[in-house]
Each structure stands twice: as structure tokens, then as C-alpha cells.
Image (tube, rainbow, N blue to C red; front, side, top):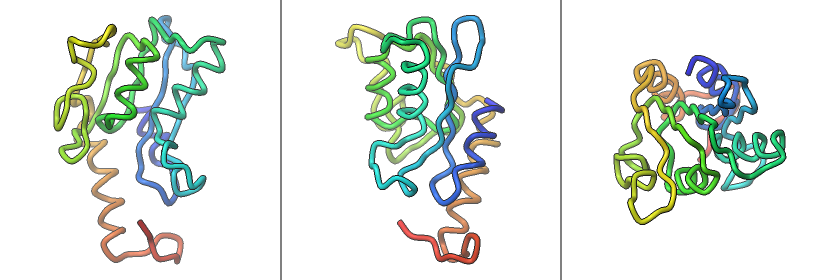
Length: 152
């Protein structure tokens, strides 16, 4: 999780969410930080970027045996993507009561109707992950970043 926090801290003007995909042997395969603002792409969530890069690196969309570590509870899009990618384990930090799809608002990853359900570890370094978000949204509420007003 500390590596995901490091990635999240480098997202610039986007919401600080970081994701890391690890192979079954613990090797880091790929990282992703939110890039929606930088790219104008609504799907450029940290998890999606990390999953795409891990699939590219392994040469397969099936990420069986892999672990996805992310600083924030995945949304429905990201939860669906990690299920479809056959990620074996999901580890996340802070809960997301507004859009979370791993227990907060929905529980996509544990839906018995789906053909794959990853093992889930929630709340890992939760306070540290939540602090990144509180800091970002505190700035959003009126402060500026690098001298530029923030936008949504």
C-alpha cells in the first residue's frame, strides 16, 4: 500500500488515487495514478491504467494470480474491470461512501452472479490513504495548487 500511496501523491491536479498491480511472486507489474484531468479521459482511473499496463506487460488480459493494491475503494467501473481481468486479490485503503463498489454503495466484487470473485482486504493504511484525499479536497474548497485555481 505504501507504493500505491507514493503513486497517488504524484497525480498532480487529479484526485490522488494510486494503484499498483503485483504478480503472484510479489513483483511489481504496473502502476497507475488518476489521470482524468491530464488526459480528458473519464476512464483514466488509477486502477484502469494499472490494469491496462499490467496486461500489456504480461501479454494477457487475464491477471489471474495478481494483486491490485489501490488507495481508494474502487468504483463500479474499476470493480468491474478487476473482476473481468480475473485479478485474484484486491487490497484497498480508504472507503468511498459515495461511489464505492466493494461494499460501500455496491458490492460488485462479491456478486455471486459473476464468474469471478477476488479476495478482498479493505481498510489497509486507511488513515494515510484518507489523509491524501482530505488534503486534496481541502485545497479544492478554496486553496490553489501551483498558483492555479482548481477545477472539477
